[in-house]
Image (cartoon, rainbow, N blue to C red; front, side, top):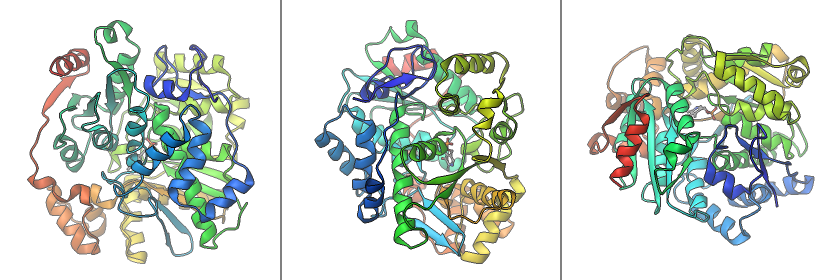
Length: 489
Ligand SMILES: *Cc1c(COP(=O)(O)O)cnc(C)c1O
C-alpha cells in the first residue's frame, strides 16, 4: 500500500484516499508519495498500442493503491469518454519538424484542468465519508473546470474564489453561468495570490472548520487528486511520438510547460521519476518570472508587483507546487522545506543551498516570454502553420525556442498546449490582426472567421446563458462569505 507523507513531515502518513479528502496537510505542507513507483520498460513500451484509458490505469493504479481495480477502471472510463471531443483525449499536433503540441484542451471547459477535474470528483465520491465542501482558488481556468467537475455531485458543495479584476471576460462568464444546486462563485477583491492564501488559511483553521458538519477539501493542484491524473498524459504523448516514428522507445525527450502554480510541470517531472525518458524540462513563464529567476539563481523572491498579462492563468507569484518539487530535490529533507517555506511566509523570499541548486542545473531550464514575444509567437506560428496558439501555449513555444538556442538542444520536445485559443480570443485576435477590440463575443466571431476553426463548445452558448452567481467578498471577509454560503445549503 502506497502512503503519502507531508513535505514538512508534520503529519502522519496517509492513504491516497485520505490525502485526496484532506486536500492539503492540515498543519501546512503538501502530500507527496512516500516512495515513487516505477513503470518497467515493458510497461512503457506496451503503451504504444494502448488507449488513453489503458495507459491511465497503468499509471494511476501505481499511485492510488487503496482503490480496487474495478473502481479505478470505472472512474477512468467515466472520466475520459464522451466529455472529451477527441477520442484520443489528448491529441498530439505536429507542426513542421519541431513543434509537438500536446493539446490538453479537448475537455468541457477548454483548458487542461479538465484532465484532472473530470477525474477527481468521480474518484472522491467513491471514498467520501461525509459531506464535503470543496474550496477552490482560481486564476481563471481551474474555477470553471472544478465547477463542471463537481456540479450536482451528491454530497458536495463547491465554492470558487476568483480575483475580481484578474480573469478574462470569457473566463468569468464561464464561471458565473454555471448551473447546479451545489455551486457558488465568489469574486474576491484581490489577486490570485490573495485567493490562494485565503483558501489555504481556511484549511489551516480548525476552529473555523469545526463549526460545520462537512469536511473541507480543495480542488486546486495542492490536492494530490488533481496532480496524479496529469501524470498520465505525458506517457500517452510519449507513445504518440513513438507511433509517429519521431522517436524510438527509450529516446529521451524535452518537455516544455507554460507554468503558473507549478502543477503541470511537476506532473511531467513525476512522470519522469516513474520511468518516462526525459532529458530536460523547460519551465516557461510570462513576465511574472519568479520561477525563471528561481531556476537560474536558486533565489525565490515573490517581492515584486504582480503584472496582469494576456496569459492570466500564469499570473502567479507564489507557486504552490514548487514545495513538492523542492522537497524532492533536497532528497526529502523536510527540515529544509520547513525552514525555506517559513522564510517565504515571513519575508516572501527564500534561497536554496548550493547542493540543492545543483540538482537543477543542466536539467531544469527557466525561460520567460514578454508580452510582445507572446503576441509575435502567436502571429508567426499562424502565418507559418495556420494554427492559432492560445497565449499560454504561445509563452511555451516562445520559451522553447529560447531554450533550444541556450542549450543547443535538437531533441524532440513535447510542448504542453494548455488552452483552446478561443478561450482567450481577444488576445489571439489582437495578435493576428493588430486590432484591439473589446467584447468577448465579437472576438469569438472574428477568430472563427480568421481561422476557420469552430468555437469551442464550452464557449459557444455563453452569450445566452443566465448569470447565476454574483457574490463578492474581501480577503478579510472570506470566512463570513463561506459561512453564509454554507448556511443556505
Ligand atoms: C492553469 C493554467 C496554466 C498553469 O498551470 P500550472 O499547473 O498552474 O502551472 C497554464 N495555462 C493555462 C491555460 C492554465 O489554465
